[in-house]
Image (cartoon, rainbow, N blue to C red; front, side, top):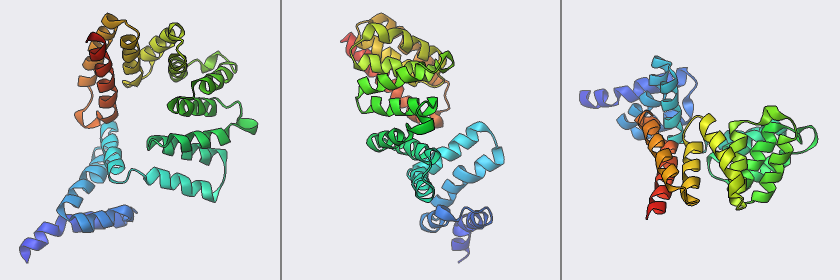
Length: 248
């Protein structure tokens, strides 16, 4: 009996913490079903970020929560939109759908936002353009980006440049894609822009430049906390595959 008490004591203590901190769902269910493993997950996802309070700890906690319940933000966004059909809630749903790779739904939500006073909103225009890019609708995406650029030079940011580059590449206008790809790769944190540019270089026959770019990507990748490499690993692998294919 004492052994069972000691085995499940961490789950009991975590359960008490979950109730007191308002984290009843889904944590009580996880703690009951998961036993000691559930308690260990709770410690990593909830308690460690609270104790450490740092950016890395918060990212680890967020990553653990998303792994346990990847549709949590999506459900919350959908419920919010049902309660209040506002542009802000549509944007929230679009972003939650994007995180799950549900691009047709994301595009439809963004399209509903490009109306009235939000027809010239930079965030909405870029969001819709990116969704269109994921669906391979490059010409439509380019038109959204041109509308965005017409609003003023302050909108010439790294993410906008990356969207332009992808649209040009998708349309086969590679000469026009190079400059915005380079601009984005130099300015956007994370590895997506740099990896997309390396892949573009490889795919357009600039093998040596692509190889050099991949070397820099590998250097940056090794500096990322191993537990936070998730999406960056996918981008790194994409670039490496493109460079390898260009060499063969």
